[in-house]
Length: 260
Image (cartoon, rainbow, N blue to C red; front, side, top):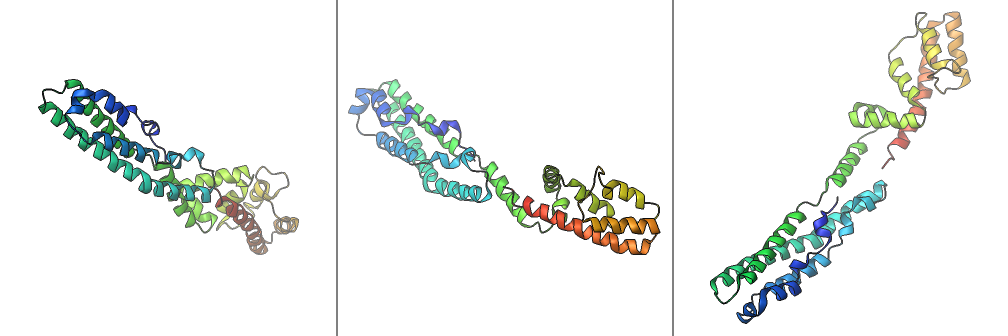
């Protein structure tokens, strides 16, 4: 969330001091318009807004911090921005009323009427800007958290296009993409004489490019089954290997879901 730059610096044209200077002596003699009071109220309302509450760049990249900042920003908008909007609407209405009254009085110079019109226009610009406070960053973060809270396993993450990409990137940082790859490629696959060596060379052989981290006993059991042609026993061995890798991936996933 961020506030447009126009809101961060109060315009002098919307101050009572500037108005008193520009409306001139003849307009003052015509009587009180109430515009000065509404300008004073508006400036006070603007000063009450904590604009930093809408600056996401100042929020720590931490889920708790982001959630708290979002709540604080929403509360600040309701507490301070909404009153400011009401004050601006008051300025606009009073400026229009003042301008109309001045136009009817031939003794009041056009410069005073123009000053009232300019105040109304400036207030309108500020009012529009209050509707342009950008909440997309916070909303995207909160939506992401809702979706992430629904993830129970790494497989859930892989079913989501965005999270699948993020999870694999996270695995890459932890040098564990081979674990996810192994589980995906070995799921439902029966190891036989035809593919046993390929599986071994790719994932189990020491120093293999995609070597998975499993106990040596599991690797030895695989090698024995492959050497003796015990394909029935290989089924149990593969189940044991997959179980080990599942634990590793689950451990990686447990850290992934803690990301801000």
